[in-house]
Image (cartoon, rainbow, N blue to C red; front, side, top):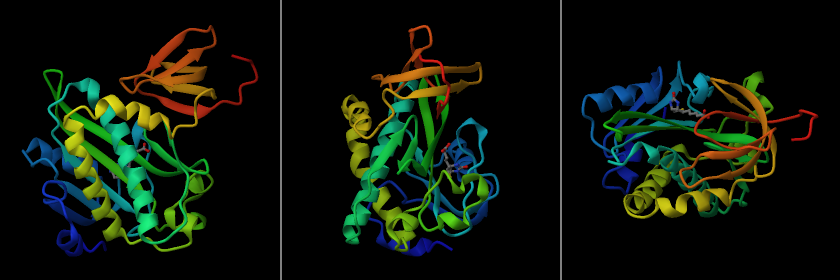
Length: 272
Ligand code: BTN
């Protein structure tokens, strides 16, 4: 089990992770933290679990992770910002997570890895998913009253031991580097990086977030299938706009902005 006392002792933050709940098994760290948020838990509360029985990602997909190998945790934010900032907070979190991975590798004299972003919230290495972020919010009067950011990052689970449904599309930091990853240290590093940047979030950080995020995204110009609850279509990814929405060109040449949906590379033969 994750050594929670070690995290508490080593953590150099004043808000994030100061209230920390660690579980061996839970249904979902996001679901639990949403309940705590409704009961008035303070900003920065973190819930971590070694295993989730109902871990979920976007589009109600399951998040699969072997017990005690990876990091599964959720953070509570109370940003007092309009709903429109939700996407940007998620993009900012992806940047912070990528920076944490790079800092960790550097601190351990491990070779750097090329991390790329897939809209809206995936971190990939060599086209394989290393981490996903799920934001769930409690809204009031068009403002974000509370936001739970759930992060799943594959640290130590060997790719060959992953369930068949994700084995060919996922990766882990251990499989990439060949070295075991210290989960406690990684969690502390992430929380410190998060807190350092969160101050900037409150000011004008958001003006730069999208541009910074785009630097790591290699999806532009790609032909993709876009799936939303309203249907499916083929398009070409053109941009991510200043609100963090995906901009794509549909088959009629119309530019559309997508707030939420599922993007997969398209093998469709018709030119767009
Ligand atoms: C995605 O890729 O769609 C997002 C995956 C987010 C998974 C994490 S694991 C910790 C937290 N608890 C959950 O139930 N989901 C998130």
